[in-house]
Length: 237
Image (tube, one colour):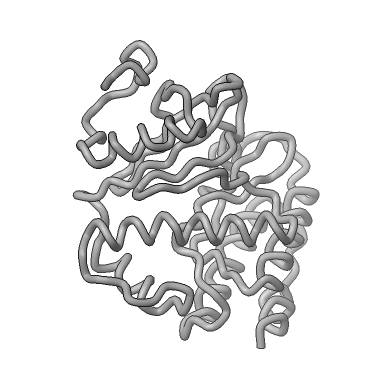
């Protein structure tokens, strides 16, 4: 069962039997050929660089079922009208959490937001396009903080992405320099906590996203749009 782990470069500790079966299901469907190397490891999920049968790079996000913040996930899900009858069962919650991120990314792609393309989701495994080169992920804006980039241009792009996403009725809720990759342009990532405009705390989350983005770019001496929150708020009210 370890043939797909490219020469043992990916540690198996995250792969419980059910996760392994989910990965093999995606392989059988022709979505994944091999897992190559871990590119990001967190408490609740692991992102692995992978390849498809054409040799193209993919990003595979695997949620750690046993280590996830089950209660927090459940609270987010039951407040999302798109997901009904959520059982208070760890696997069921994590599966729907992965589906939710996939759905949020689909909507973002449909309205032209620059972000990874969602490819497939099965159980706790989410497959998307890879942002980077040769299995090396693009850096985040936070990692590039000291670099000489055209920060004003990047800020203008991110404002545009936020407008498109808000018009589509999605609030990222965790938007910051840590969740934006830079690969010739900015790519928004990690839509797992994204909520719809109907969420009772949607405006609060939106205001927090705007604050995070404006504070980062203010430190880069970029002229900040002080009316950004009001502009976005009017799109969903």
